[in-house]
Length: 248
Image (cartoon, rainbow, N blue to C red; front, top):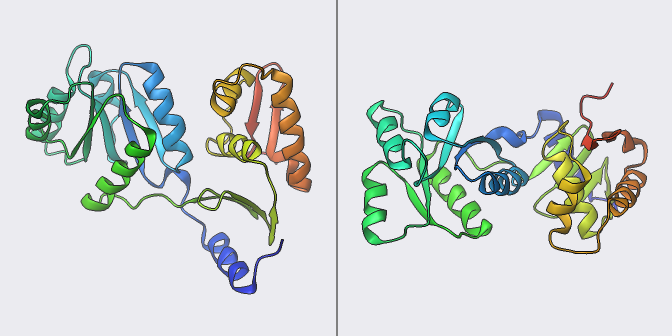
């Protein structure tokens, strides 16, 4: 399927001027549960955000930089609490927006969070949709950063996260839902090597009959559809696959 002349011109302009990279808005996730960090890193990364993770308030203080547009901050941390970290940042006149994550959702807890300098409050367990919506809302409201572009652009290869489409040049390349999700996972974090087990856990989730061979078959199909851009997906023997933007 071909784009119309107007659509093609728009895509060419985005390529010429350079769409914002996935790291257009950077978020620091602070949570002492590695699984929570991984879930947020994967899902917010696929939304186009650049994610840094810290597992304690003390580590967060070392990693926080002026480039960060938002903190997703767990309240119940070992050592310094999330509330104390927020108060510390506000005392230092650091105005980075903060969304608290907590399993405590009483009115008193919420008021404590807002008093400590929080901009929003999300109760655990949370839905990823809610987190994404609240992140976008806080960024818009505070004006610290625009929500990221909904396209990943690598030369003439465009992965449209909104329309769920792969476009190469002026041609839309049909992908299955699984193929698209696999491609987004790899391309959302260029040059990071994903083990087959990681890919299965993220793309197929709880499906019990998926093997590593299934991953290989889907990668082969995606490469075939990429045509002369197939080298964008590289195999790291013994380790897994990566989206190879540093290729010569």
